[in-house]
Length: 301
Image 1 (spheres, rainbow, N blue to C red):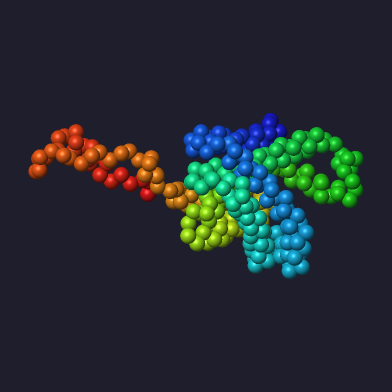
Image 2 (cartoon, one colour; image 1 turned 90 degrees about the horizontal axis):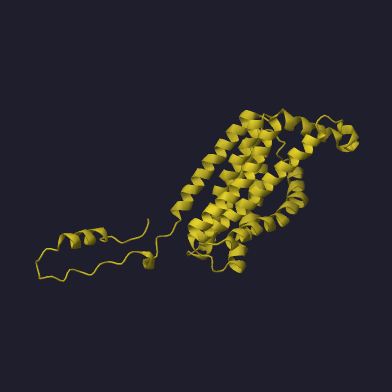
């Protein structure tokens, strides 16, 4: 039963981005191509992001005494911020490149949302597939002597990971799905923020803002996660961290809908012709209803 619960959580993490993609493609009519380009953009950003962290950022932080294994304080805060900035620069940079060179006609709010859903969707799919693969692997090792299948140099770390995985309650794995749902909201918002770099004056400020918000969300999640013991398997820490991420996702969605452009004039209903009756004559009831209905034909705020 415990294995089934963990497997269901992994499958939910996989299903969420696909269901959102189907909904947005139908609702916004932006097409699957934008979703797929968004997914490819995430993968492409990680091709550079991950090696940079391993080869450059992590060694630099180690020399400075920063790291996620530090006690809560300035060193941990600095590490969380640097990791967040790294993610922001590479992922938002990849989005900018995609808008500039690969989806040059995608300039509407709906297209930006669909593109962002693909970016966050790829991240969620990879997380879900990884969780499912880990479950299968560790389930196969359950009841076996790890010393027989794991090299001696890696035995201690493998045993720690194995014990931590099975000590966590099954229900806690559903928080991974909650986190991915929150991340999807953030990713869609970031995609539309980067889009403003091509739609507004001083667009570079929107690009910088996207990097900053990405860094803030990631840094807050890392700092709170380490402080509350998420990486040590603390169930209460998981709850606190996911609540924080959920609040930041809600704030992101608020920004997302604030950036939604008004309806274009062509999409608005036509204004009825002006009253042409005798001077001073009151319009008929039907004319009065039409006039008041279209008195302010402006789009959405």
